[in-house]
Length: 433
Ligand SMILES: Cc1ncc(COP(=O)(O)O)c(C=O)c1O
Image: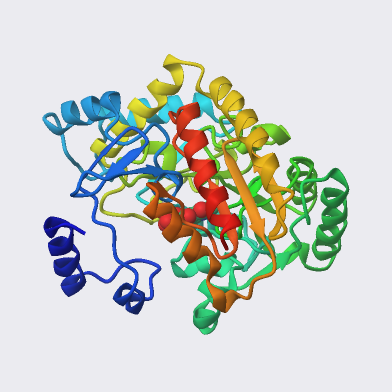
């Protein structure tokens, strides 16, 4: 590491407690200081490039320092940096809301702003509970899929099911039960999981406020994937029992799964849709909860009736973030991003075939611009993912396996040559394990 890289790392470790990290690991695993970004690349202070194969925690869809998004944010910076959204409004929020209503499945007509994914999940949970309350019903139980992930705040953690993050905080969590996620991407496993969902709803349906799902792909849950039919049938069952369906599209929204929103593949309009991450192209924190007029109207009455949704965050609907989101949507409007992604994902799938014959590979799976290789034959203490991570860094590719799952979720602007480098580097890492 050169002098500048080392200096920043030393200063960092004096002060910063990093997210989702056992800090002691950094005694042996160096932090990577990043000086600048451009397109699919991040550069350290030595100007060593790394292909960002995970879109910086799944947020960056059009590359780093994207000219169009940067220009839009710069104009906004000189116009209005922030104003509270209670009692006030601004043009970027209004324009963005109008665009989102047009883009998302028909029937989602109202937008509540938040400022990160977990907060959006909290909003959807609270709104669902409150909707039933405003209708005179007390439904204090939530339902989610086994192996799901919805964020780290207490409510969001409660509806998640990844033991590693959740177990410690069990005494603090709100009531939530899980129904089995379909085992794989086949129609048969979707049908089986629907039968299990039906059983749960027969027993508990009247207590459940909302069923929250990550449509098609469970991100932090090892990039587990399932068939769109499950969502279609789950929505019908939810309607039967008066339960809201919350589609958490925080990771899968904005073209990641091959359609603009994953729910489109099931032809479903959920009661709530949460969006964040790709919403601002990975520039600024912003999240929205989209919902129906029916839900909105359940809160609309005289103040004295005490039915209002009194929830807020200081940076709700920040104008700079809204400008970044508008610029991101303009990039989708300017070219056939989804069509190009389909070609790239077909190419990625073809390249992944060679992994299938490796002795330590259990499964290769893909949905749109998300591809995953599940390794087998290792104990969790071996921390096999770290070895792949290290090999990637040594060779200029930022891979960040989830345990024994090596996955690719690159920015959409990745070229075919860069795809080759990203996948071949992972291949070399896996054959050397
Ligand atoms: C599906 C899903 N929901 C919610 C979240 C939480 O978002 P945030 O990290 O912005 O709080 C994540 C984050 O990875 C996610 O993947």
